[in-house]
Length: 562
Image 1 (cartoon, rainbow, N blue to C red):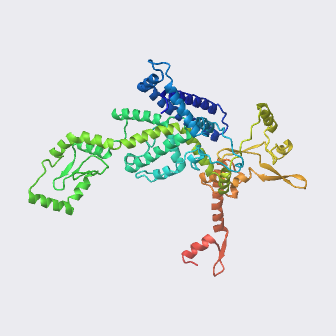
Image 2 (tube, rainbow, N blue to C red; image 1 turned 90 degrees about the vertical axis):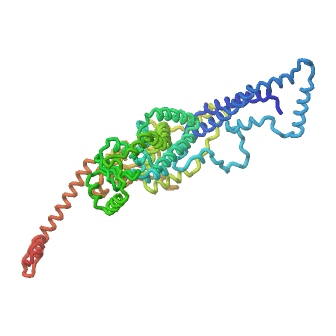
Image 3 (cartoon, rainbow, N blue to C red; image 1 turned 180 degrees about the vertical axis):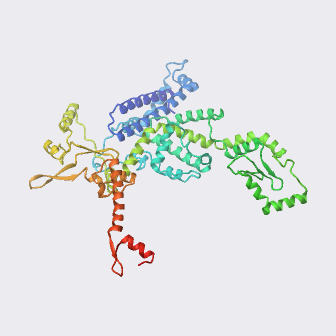
């Protein structure tokens, strides 16, 4: 067993090395979202190791008996020149290294090298591409932690009972975004929120949000935030400040019995209140109706006739035929509070998960907004464009250029690679700006705004692209319509469908919503005029040779005059 003093010294050394490695990692510039997330995950792992070693070191210092025994063993007051313990330990160290001559002196350095990316690559492994462990934590829809994948939760939400109007995915994201100001899903009916399906749904949503927060924000202590939110919820719950989770059935029954107004059928034991309670309650043979006519109608039913006959034979009459029974009132008076509290505590789990999910959604508001924007962008893409986007995402990213030995040489290379483009001209096939005269020729500096496409701006009526044909004249310009072509694209077609108009050739070149609606009304009127002219201008002849227009001919034929 190693000396406790040596273990303390070694733990101190490891903590110091980890702190230096943490500073080195966080001081690097992060240019992309992927590198930033990788750095945060490495920093989170280092912080976990530091925390575990701090706990271990604290336990060493708390163990005063072992420390005192170690000190007494190394420095004996009776014989200070006795070095037998020292030589015994020295012999064990020599024996260990003689038995394992190739063992690393300090394996801790290798662990740090992995965090700092200082591991040398073996020769011949250039074609081998190592899987990114961070990318494996996210699904394809999440795109390395940029967006949320809530499609499964949306499906569960759409299948809730008593939901009412079912929302699309974009509207569902809007509902979650509204949690920044109010409690999430406060718009749902109380019958829906008190159901078992809602509890399962909110539990799945909370589990996913916690998992995503830990994966996308590794440096944020989500567990502590949730613990604080739960403590706050417990205080508010005990104080009765959280409303909306009372049992509807108990509330309606208490209201009906509290006013004392109603009609009791002594045979059927059915209480019919006169108050307009639109909820049916079945409890202890009682039934609440909303109208007096229901009670009058049941008097002629077979069930009531049989119950009245049995009552006459048995001779049992309720003690209070015009109101609730005394025993029933006494029972309600003693156990009503406990029953209501038990019903409320029944839904405490759903209320707690709703409160915690609201806190998580508030912290993920930026990611949720980006998710909505990404969904809207993907809806505007065609099937071919989506397929091309998936192909580009599946391609491996180019490796970073090797850094030069000196920083000055690297800066010179960057300056050489920079392209001087002060006029912000479009780039040609060679990655250089196109000539300014060609830019002016095709009107690429003119903005064309389409109000139907949500005020999207198209630069130039035509966009120029270039290619080189080998051994021919050299540069050949190929022109493809940009603004003109967009009238047939999905973005413009989506805007026309939102206006309730067909995207036909009649609406080509129409960019304003007001003009499109006016043209649609004009085409509608012209269509009616064409039908009217067809009825009045087309001529038909009868058997006697008389000529009539179509409308007159059909009217006379229906009357049997021709």
